[in-house]
Length: 327
Image 1 (cartoon, helix red, strand yellow):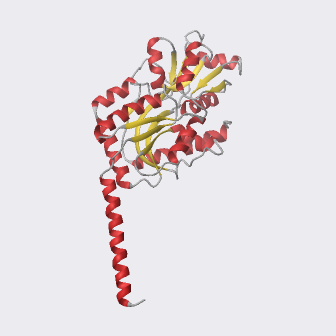
Image 2 (spheres, helix red, strand yellow):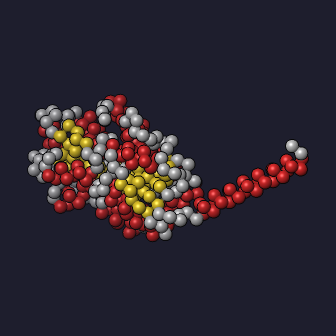
Image 3 (cartoon, helix red, strand yellow):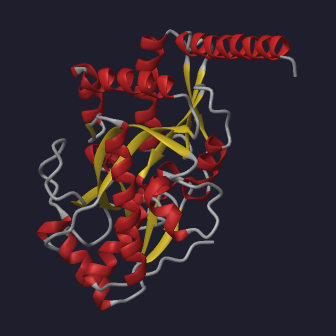
């Protein structure tokens, strides 16, 4: 190629690269320019959806575009997670991940349909809450100690509901059974909503749930709380004992976080992190989340990344001691 022609080609390539970079930067600066989807991997009626709606409402105000909650339940959160992982990384789809989708499912499912680490970018840890053991008011046990004694006396007689195989309430129940040395039959549901309905109706006597979704029914007397799974008593109701008061050292906390599909541009991730942190720091948001029995969190994407790694390690250790079978 002649020097003059070569120089012209190089110049054209440089201009084209500049235009592409400028166009990409402009698109990111203009984000968002249309509605955003927040995928929740559980059906409506549970704590995941309720708290996601709080965040979506506030994000809509701050971003100037509608943030829509898209409930896609099933397979312990795998269906929603796999769907979100396959969406375009353009800043218009985010995922409401949990300790189940990003800590448990990668361990207990042979083919969950997504890679919790490779297919997502951590954005921000949003909220945490204890799990809770609740029973139908007609169930004889008034304390966790009484429940354990009953389960030991009649192994396998009692059944317990949980919002999906692999959810953190389910795994909390498995850890409790392992620690207490009891056999209780797990009945997985497609979310907290239907599991709560059956427990309230008395079809299943016991339920392991997230405190936020059970709290209204505890307050109304439709369910009786035996214990929360966190190391300390819940701020929203300090009258409920902890599991650790019966089984020392027990500590399992549910969490919810925002993730983006892999390759989502860094400026968009950074902007969303700032906006969510501002929302979580607002007293009004903290009061709304406290009503669910949860606590607002926040922080950097790196904080969430470390949490995911530690959760995967934690549940891997439990599976070695007490394998959980899922379909």
